Length: 296
Image (cartoon, rainbow, N blue to C red; front, side, top):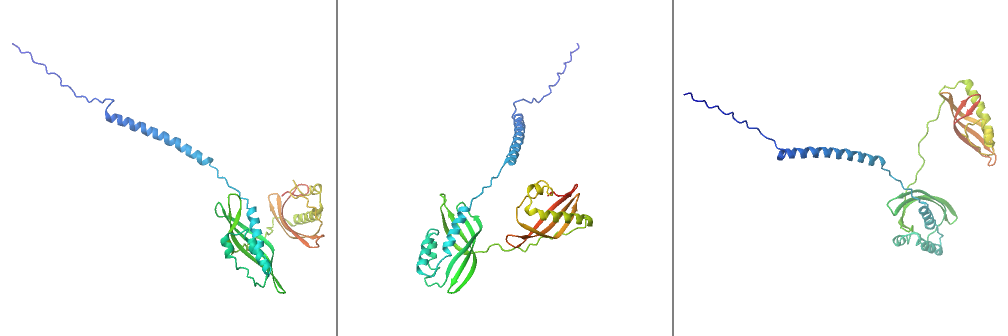
């Protein structure tokens, strides 16, 4: 008999199933969502920060120092004035109580001795600088001009000092630093460059402009607005109404720029009221249409 061969069953292939709930997949989804969310957050945050930076405004406060300046001037007038007698010195000491702390009053007890041989009269006080130190303190630099008398001798003394003023919330003030020797601004060594002609204006044009300027400056001191309008465009120069007599143009310098001529000139006048010479300096721009006009 023929034996029926057993058919071999195919072996099962093991397939790895990836479940939607496996921990690794969940982790990857969380990571993806977190990354996208963080990117969106950063994007909106960056825009917000930029907007804030563009709209930020810094406000500057203007401090009115008139009261402080007046307080220091009144103090200085008392401090630097005295007569060489006991009554005047005692009055000065008493008056300083209205300006200085008790400590400074004690410090100044012997600054003007009873046997002092001089008298002092203040003729001028100038405030040079007021610097805010903090919310309540201000440093003030000032100069004082004194007429010092000793016997029959008189002389002028100029000095400069610095004090510190304390201002309370009510606006009341007190000197908290004694007048301390200080410096004030002096003349600078700066010298501006003297303008020079650059040869761009020919001789004929130079003569025309010279005559125009002489005519104008003779008229200018007493000219009305209507009279000036024939020489000046758009009220560049306004009427001055002064009794000046024109003398001469001094060192006129002409430079041509495009179709205009730039002028630097000094003008010499006689002031009929003071009898003094008045020297004025002008930087003008001239333009010619039918006639020359001052346009700037």
